[in-house]
Length: 268
Image (cartoon, rainbow, N blue to C red; front, side, top):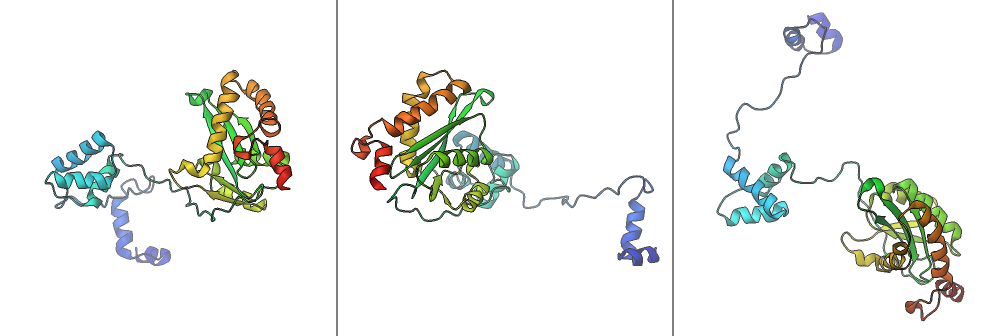
């Protein structure tokens, strides 16, 4: 026993304990014993746990609000205990460990085309299996826009659309701005930087940061998508025709009744 322990670098008592637990004589791994304590002298009372769960299901509020309401009812409990109860019962959504924090660059002043280009996606269809996605992009200065339909959204599709829009754009994109959707992840930011541009995220729950593009999304749906069949072939045929009309023929009130193409030429 001592020679084996010395050879593997363990204590002889540890090897002896493992041998006593090895009731299969090496045919199966030694089961690991649970380190869970046998008693919980400071555990929360069942009625307190039930009150936290009921308050969460009734109001769907955050742990801080639930903690305040529980205290208002005369029950004493800490905020950390409330969070643990919600986590154990699957009533709190934790941040994915695979997502990294987004550190956005300062918002630039949109003085010329390409200084600030907003990018987003439109989800069309109630069911995921039948849903279509439309990538949209708009330059804040000139209101020049682009769009492309897709059967799915992910980082690679976002980069594909960005390349498609850049090849058709009369100017280079300097800064892209998007929301925090999964299709605009940190990998998307890194790939945009490799392409010589910058990518920043808008503020959480602040759709006004992308107000120009949100307005274009509504215009695209009202003037184009709602009047054609909801099929991939129809979108692929009609969206490019509408984009040519929007960029070269449709007068824009915010540009003094100029078209985006005329605005780009005037600034250049």
